[in-house]
Image (cartoon, rainbow, N blue to C red; front, top):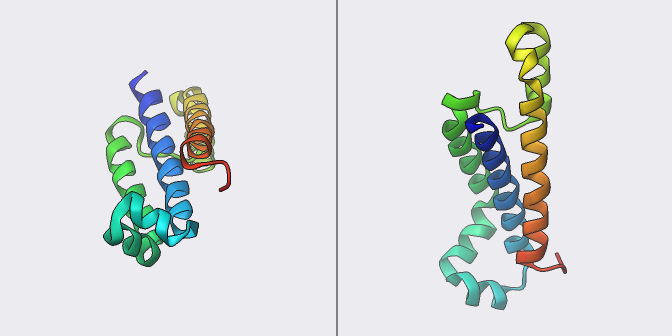
Length: 117
């Protein structure tokens, strides 16, 4: 169960923070400035891609001991097919948990950040 939660939360945070970075970069300056302050607005415009990369790095470190830090079903299928055995038996975890996390993060992004994005 801990592995499922780690994969789910890792993918959820990656998708949610990634969509948030895109929304901040596309929002109007007044709304962003009032909501997050000038410093975060400037950071989002200048360093949006870096923020996503750093977030992914931290999420992989978070899930590394539990699941190997997969967070990506496509990345998990190849090694599981070649390793076989228990890796193949647990493949469902690495496919289902990130998918559910990504879908839930997309819904959260839509309803928390607004439907106009």
